[in-house]
Length: 420
Image 1 (cartoon, rainbow, N blue to C red):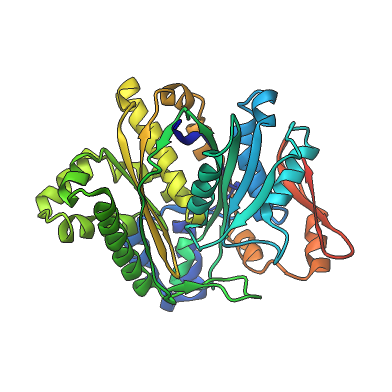
Image 2 (tube, rainbow, N blue to C red):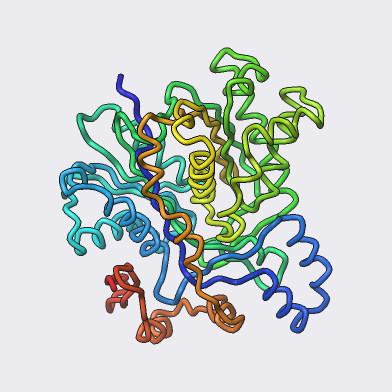
């Protein structure tokens, strides 16, 4: 059977950026009682800033913009071969119509030669939705001939404010091009470690624009589920934990904030692999684990896309250090979804990875931020859900050239999109 996996990664994040220093200054004036806990939270999470959307940006427009990054690097023939378009999201815009359907419409209207002989669908399980989109489309491709797929993670992380949860907000989308004989990552589809449990660490009730989270409990759930899914992976592969880690070159985990996956991985290495403090530190250094958080720290929490933002940064970082020697190295993936589920699986860096990575504009992506006043952030927090009120905000839309955006609402409430 031909290898299946990821051939390219496209990232889109909105431009408005809130620095943690600005958040601290503003909250010190408006809610001084929050300063000690907020300061401690910023220090512990390692967060520098986060992105938030313009009034004319939503989950679907973010997804379409990330898809265009990938499609612009393909020939018309390759674009027409896409048969599956899936979106993983926990911030959907409709109870019935999938985000993926909106994305297909935007791309088609913009002139991309997508076929209508395709299926579009969404996947949901909190932050694991993007991985479920990836693996499900990869499974379907295994029964197809010369077809390809787009698996997109798109979300807007929004919490009650003012609170310490503000620092783990963010927005953006990541598009993965999935193919047979992939150029970037060959997925080891034969074995996955799985774990699920019905818990209430995080959820967003219908009608609520903000998520409800039990921070400390959610961290515990993350750690437990990673351990159990890793044990399941070892059992299914017939290998010891020590052997699995000895053949692991890199680790990519879900990143709500930088310190959370680091704590979870360190605990896993101690409790399951029996490593002491020095050995844990050596493993983190060997895998360049901490170094690759640089995009997550400035973009914030992209929910379903956070894992793949980290993967993008990791591959770019290691290619700059190793060049073509990056080929063949194995990556352990740990994808967590609150509520909760965890998937542990592996991939191998493909022979075409160096050529693919050379096309990524990481510098332009990280420097695409727009300096914003704190008042603009407050306007986003207070964005109306009433269609008529929201429509008034859309009248002043100024999307940059080539950017998909929410243009209007129909009389029945259907979202109408345009391209700048």
